[in-house]
Structures are given as C-alpha cells and as structure tokens.
Image 1 (cartoon, rainbow, N blue to C red):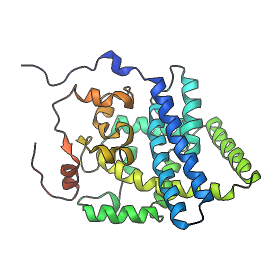
Image 2 (image 1 turned 180 degrees about the horizontal axis):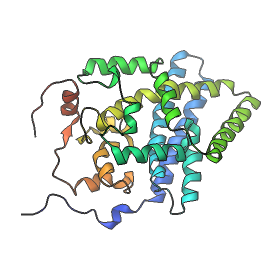
Image 3 (image 1 turned 90 degrees about the vertical axis):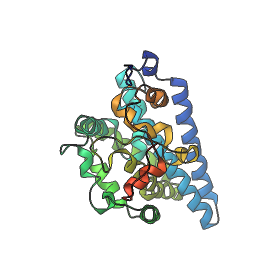
Length: 283
C-alpha cells in the first residue's frame, strides 16, 4: 500500500530571504503609517483604527520572528539573532534568546505536563467548551485590556535568562523612548504601546486557541483566505506541519502539508464546533 506520509523535499527547507525581507518591510511600513495616522488624526475613530492595524501587524511581525527562533533568518546564527531581535522581538518587549529557550521546550514537551505553554494557556479563558459568542465577547474585552495580565506573564516567562540579551533589550527601549520623547512624539509612543497591550493580544489569543487547546497534539485546519491575513498570518494555520517539521520556513508549510495526508484537516467551522462542544461532520 502507498504511504500517506512522505518526506518533504529538500527545497522546502530553504528560506526565501527576499520574501522574508519583503514581509518584514511590508508590516513595518503598515505600522509606521498607522502610527502617523493615529498621531495626526483629530478623531477618536482614526486613533482606534490605527491602534487596531498596528496591533494586527505587530502580531504578523511576531510570527515572522518565530522563524528567527528556529534559526531560519540566516545561516550565521549570530546574524540571525541580531536581525530577529532588532526587527521582531525587541519592539515587542522580548528577546529571541529568551523566547527560544521557552519555545523549544514547548516543542519538546508539547501536550504533556512539562509543556511550558500550559503556564500561559490555563484557566477559564482556555477551557472547553467555549462558544463562538464567548470568543467574540473575549475578543472585545481583550481590545479594552482584559489580556494585560497574560501579556505581562508571557513576557515574564520568556524573559532572557542571561545578562547580555537583557542589556540589549533595555538599550533598545531606552534609545527608542529617548528619541521619541526628544522629537516630541509622546503620543506615538502611547499609541504604539496601547497597540501591543491589548490590541496585539486580542489577535494573538484567537490564533493560539487553534494550535493545541483541547487536544494532546496539534490541531490541523484550513481557514478562509480573508481571516488568514488578520488572524492566521504567514501560514500559522499550518501549525501541525510546523511541529512535524520545525526547520521548514513559514513560506513552505502549505507545501509540506501535502506530505502528510494521514491526519484529518478541519474547516474553521469544524474546529470551532469542537471548541464549543458540538460534534461536526467529517469530510
């Protein structure tokens, strides 16, 4: 009988650096433009929309930084970490070194009592059943600050354990704040910080639910094109494939999906039916 599990071709393990550079450039361009719109807007709606777009695209930047955690930015590991820190982790209050130690343990112990994600994803906000209506309410509450405690806890558990990366993070923020205050962009700083806490987390929570909540392994699903951009960017809907082949870049995870047909792929509706405690019809 033919196998329904194949080894991904070697070409899938090569990161397209030009695509990576464009993706980083695109998201930071949106963040900068949204910061400017929020700063210059005279109406509250303009500032709120700017905050929402900044938070959404900072989440996308964090997803790109995840490739840096797996040393996929550059073959030179020192250069890899410099780029990942400056363009992805420092601006979000973390370091690639701190997140890597935590994240690699997650890969090693996923679904077990030793999985460090259990420290974050626990309690009534991560307990099944969880209805669609409740997801909507929690999303709106996250937008007004519900998740601030979880954000702080996440930053604490991924904090760098060594002095050098910690000093790099502190230096980045001291310099950034000094520049913004010197040029009088106090409001830009406030808008940016509010976008992370809580706008970033509202999107982060929805995506994180679709990874491991409710099962010992990893969910496998396929969302629509529109929600991919805002909630599941850069093929994070292929999280099953990422855990199976963690050294394959986000760019090639959909192609890697074709190498394993053994595990059922759910629709977004089926997955959220599962979360809400409903049964779903298998394809």
